[in-house]
Image 1 (cartoon, one colour):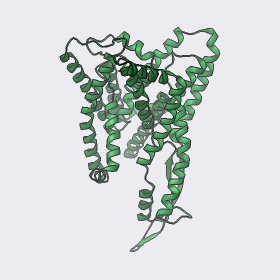
Image 2: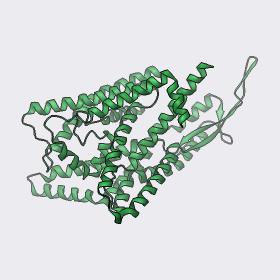
Image 3: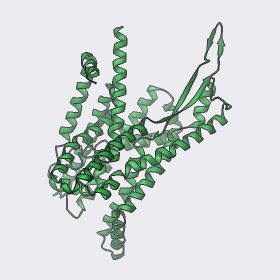
Length: 424
């Protein structure tokens, strides 16, 4: 480990890239602690600590939402815009054609994602302000409409600023910038969670803490297996003779990831689970009695941890299947293999190969979807079983941390290999 760190430090260009990334993350953390003017930060932090769903959204914003900082929206609008563009790419023929044009098409689609981010950030900022303004704690009080407009502009600009920082980091090719921003927010909260656990430590709960520590290690190992797990489909390329040269004739494999959807299903599920509770709160303040009663029943229903956990789990599993079906195209893969002279041993090229890939994908997707659902509801299970509420970083946070670390390590290793190859 120390030897690898020394090799990284000895490579001047790689050292400059890593220092730049660290500097950008420090800028992000500074911005995350600058609150919007006129906001009571203490009330916000107390409100978020008592709401699990908002706590998860706070994690995705890098901890900036609980401070209601200038970057309170985090990179959420940009992630949503990217997901929308991925869905549109599968529907709109023009965008599908762009996606097949290589880096030029990718840059164009990415530009569309940036443009969509702006109105999404404005809408999300307005919705967040209205929800917190109408909360029972009266978290936000504006003296004029101009103050609210200024706040919306500041929050939207904060999202664009983070999007820019994320792209600058990505350009250094030592990790995904958006993922590293979320990662920095989660890691930054670790000392706070540990401090709260120590302050509220009770000797009667020492056994629970030991079990929780073991469970955390098992969860990390499970997340690594879930992230790195894949099914290798053997592929053989037929020999082809062109002139006096022979091409092909090699055996390789097609990797199918157990979790092809990544964190996207959890992000989708959080948005859906969060919606009924917010609607119920708004209905509860209605002047009409039956609407107010319906809203209070809706809020009570989703405050039930069993109902909330089951809904969350089912949505994660469903969205895993949905998103994987969008990004994984067995027919297209089978056609590409056939055009390149490749085939799966024992199967005919074309539709039989596509049917086989679809069958294998559905089998491993079941295990991946269930595992991802368990990871998502892990905080609910552990807090209910061990009555420990101070350590709030749950399975989804661990999944993000492990995924980002593995991806960053791979990119850094590839950079090291590239520089060592140039020195030869």
